[in-house]
Length: 150
Image 1: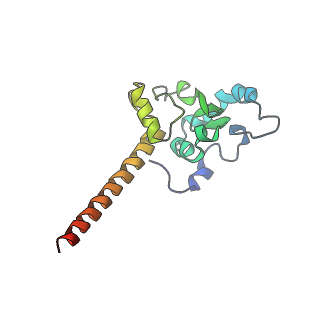
Image 2: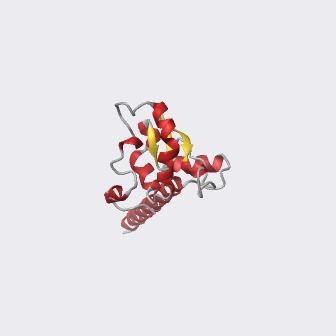
Image 3: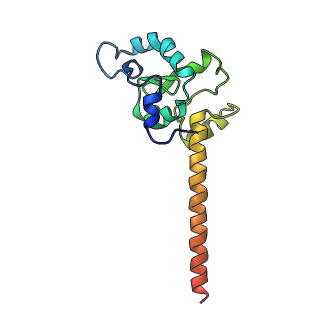
């Protein structure tokens, strides 16, 4: 379940910490990111906002060099994970399409056993919208048929 709105960001352990996504300056090097990855990923381990983080940042689409949702991303590709560090080590691997319905299908296609939190949430939202759209289409069709029978 994701937090409503963006107010959750202030409660995230990484809030205001520029080491997580250094855009420029001495800490922007990928080598610095890789060197700090273990320390930064430890902060992500217990974070309840990992799904929200991936959904908001869309690291694969944005080509992120930084830490997001418990993973270290280089050019939008996950290269390290907080899940191998601690108690979440049974977490499925993160794929470039994570946080989307396609990501959920990729987990299934690769035999991951289950999708990551971001993909499960994206799939849940997609299914809810699909059911809503299909119900609306069925109601419109029924309405047209009723008007045609008059």
